[in-house]
Image (cartoon, rainbow, N blue to C red; front, side, top):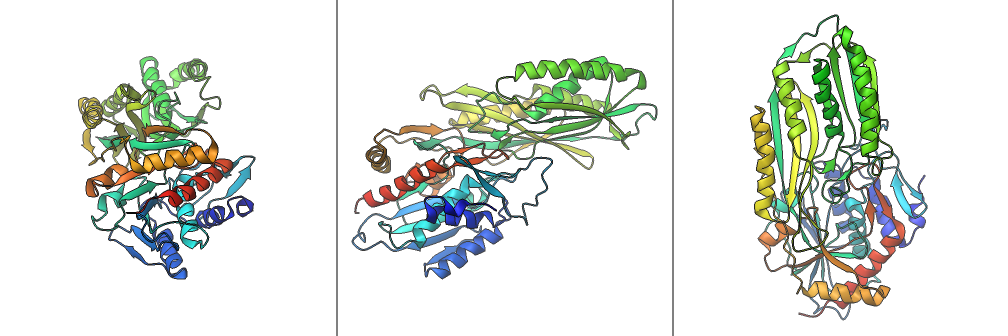
Length: 485
């Protein structure tokens, strides 16, 4: 049993705990949407939904604040559903098992969903309270942010009326975000022929696990291991020593998560077994040295298994392993105008077998639109040369920083008065929905801030408790300082 509701601010953690009880995978947010509707009815608040499932709940200004500018508070209702391989959890049915560990809130073997559950909780706390001072509020809850920004794409032009928007989907307390990267996805599909393995050959399963994983935007610069890359490198080198035959390659899951685990099943001739063992032992030592500073829990495992029913044809195998080796992953360029900001990156996210197809998922990000498509086309070219079919997602735009923003000045002043220190003002390499909002609401004045969340998009996700206190104080103080029209 967790003890979240004993934490301060109680009203925020009350709703955060309630949200943890509601399954809300991307594209399957029906239960959280219904919860929001029921919440609005319970508190006699006007609400509406659109065809995509986005929800807007409105609240009148408190006494004396009727002439203040309307503020839109925004979060997304879905969560990334990642779990450790040894964790039994059905994200469509089971509740998140959260617990307090010192200064942090963690989940048992799964993502916590603080991204963006804590943003939702803050909105609900404001909507439910009769003690907070604020002008007119519009609380926007968007769907499917994590796997396609579907709600933001589908948002209608007149769905809300406010000209100030505070996005509650940032993960570094003390930092105010005024810009973000745009992104797109690139998917490659290989078709293969099934062949019967030599009955005298031996089969092995190699597993890569223990990696930290993380957010493909926020964490891409940290030198973390990519399980697909690590596994493929072994297989590619093995082919130079013993002509193995690949039966299965399974790694990663989500386009916006750096892959943490991967495994492959392959067969070799009986007299090549010792070559496999020797290469594995040397590679295990080699890769551990390379990642000794960033991936202390990296684990490589090799085990003998039953001979698979089929292996893929050698031509497709060679093309796949070559393409995965050549496919770029990580930081491509750093910003030339904002020190320490990743400008362009790409993530080799997943490799999955599906019938007689192999589907490789990747994602690209950049704060420069042309550079985003340049790296996407670079990835495309690698897979086209390997004979794969390639397609891109429609992508989403970035959010260009405005250092003259009124809401930025208000928030900076509020932060300094509250905490006697200046916040960091910067852009983020991760994608936010703000760029899409600007396309339909070009006059929006926006800012994004939130409490500290580490390990987002992985089972290591954790929420810092004290930073949540500061986040709540800042949000409520900023709302007090919004000027009149």
